[in-house]
Length: 209
Image (cartoon, rainbow, N blue to C red):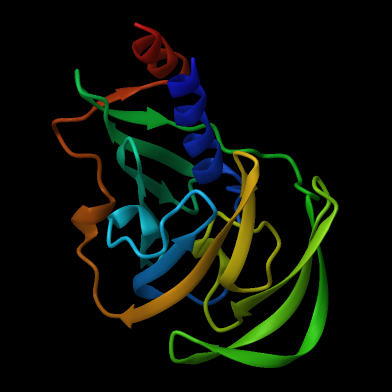
């Protein structure tokens, strides 16, 4: 049961806040975030301590690393269609997600003066209140990169550069460490031929078996 709950938690983090966004600018490149929490060993070099985001105009891919393996989230932003690619041992699957189409008012924002240097750029400060946990945290974002290339903080006025999410009873911190503006191969955003497309209910059945 714990294994099922962990899988579902990872999926919920990736598909949260995936309602369609209206953005004028596009971005193409690779973004690398460091990930830290009381559950992680900051001295470790293991891939669990980072997350990689690939963006190409209307396409998004997020590579996340967990104790149970690598998980890839891919999304066609205008069509609001997304899949999570996983290797669960018995087979490789592409889990169809059902994006939330309802307005999400979980986060409240208050602008702040000043900027912090993050990943070699100046990132604006903003106070973000997580209403579900009644907690306010100072975060950072890049206004020149659209928020549609993140699924983390719904309503952020730009790409989150430093932020925190509450999960599994702890706060997990993310900080952008590298920005590479370059051409990204479109094949990175496709479903590999060796993956079977399944629904979330079918995925749960596989894990229970």
